Length: 230
Image 1 (tube, rainbow, N blue to C red):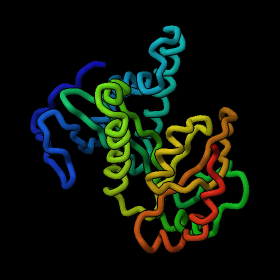
Image 2 (image 1 turned 60 degrees about the horizontal axis):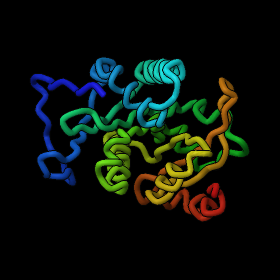
Image 3 (image 1 turned 45 degrees about the vertical axis):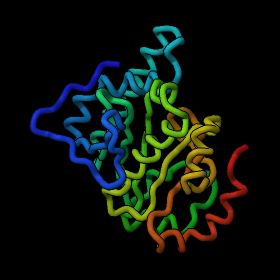
């Protein structure tokens, strides 16, 4: 992993809840221009987090290029936002963008989209998290719970900076660890979502933000307990 270089004129400002230890993980927002400058390091982080370091070089190179293509596409989206986690180097990131009011992000959802989700989408109240990545070394050196805490803090920090009422994300159905973590953090499983480029099937999850949204999705929350894959 290439260490992130210090950035002149951008001192880190601790925020509420940030750990105070000297080597603690620090979170900060970066704009699209800084995200582009970090693209190489972010791609390395992605390859490492996918546990492909022992895979053939050709496979790792293809995974890296695929990630860079997706990142470049997300960076161009209106409202793109990213939060990175650092110690003395880059250890994690989370990024995403607001879901368009046209509802195209939900294209491929298997079944009828709940009316409450349609209304929140039409009002511009949904923010999609594309990726949350954490360096595997951090989870090896520290207790696994702390590695999971970095991922949780990244998603919370990313969502807190937007006037969104609902977070949304897509997860590989075979990634049971991520699904279990998201469930413990309050995410609700909506069901299957198909992306035609694959075709690839994902689990679509949402996170109500605020009491009013939670109340509107109360029925969905009740049903969610039976939707989670084992």
